[in-house]
Length: 401
Ligand code: MN
Ligand code: MN
Image 1 (cartoon, rainbow, N blue to C red):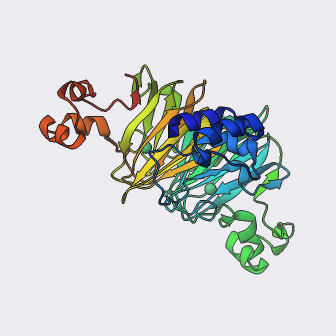
Image 2: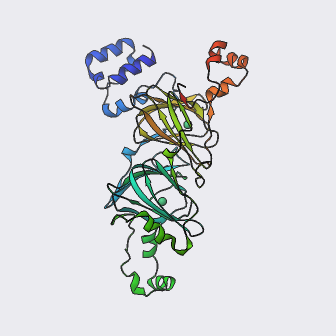
Image 3: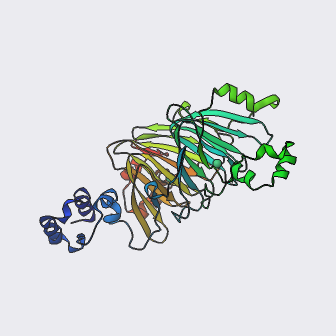
């Protein structure tokens, strides 16, 4: 039995392999294709390419490049929760870290700042975000599903869930070592300053701050804020609003490219000026393929929003590994490694490609082969001219075209 048929047989019958008849059938074909010891059949069923790797995967090991948010440590509060996947959970993810957060209606991620740049996408519901720019001018906006925001390093900000059911979002920080639990919080900072200093600094009596919380709030429940315009006006004061837009409305732009196989929206500093983190939001229809490509300028951090897919990363030195992904998983591809993402489910596969880079850049494998002298390519691949002529001339992004 070939590696491929063996894989499909076991992948589709993960629960049935325990049966004697099935075992006999595999053993007759290839005794190595059995796994008689203990197994977590549910997890195995979600990871068919790890359980029985395609024959093209290498025997030499490739560092793990998947971590499900399901495994992440969740910090729960009245007002919401937070969990993160950083270099501690996924050691290969050195350049970017992800924090997934839920806020109830009225729930606040308290006023804070940090050294990493914060890129975010709304996954559910609505929220109000606040910040001030480097000139001290205020920014207050409401965001909904698929809207983005970006707060550069050191810009103080907050997030609050709105009616009817708050929000959930994904934060992506441009530092794999980042932790949401190590930020400068308003409550924490105030609790660690002598009362007489606070009184002098704010020109009020010491009594004024006697009720400041003694511990950080991080996430807390309060009332849902009033109208946006009133908040904007109150925050702006006589100085006026910031001319900078820290938010971006992803769905108000047309797809950057659309094919029969799917579509992609690229948002980077060319259209979202304040952002130094680049994003491609990719949709791959059932049977489609995010084409073979690589990124010359940055590692890729992935978040799978919906559907199922698999990815092979081809590393240097005859190494390759294929892993399976689904809703809620984080994936990672190191800079310049060749990869594809195939929709292996029967619904749309939607995922984010994130880069610590001003601009999105990728090289298409097809485009490269199509723009190299054909005789040279044929001499490498032992293929014919008709095959090369069929290769797409330009980047397709998602196949089929
Ligand atoms: Mn933040
Ligand atoms: Mn990619």
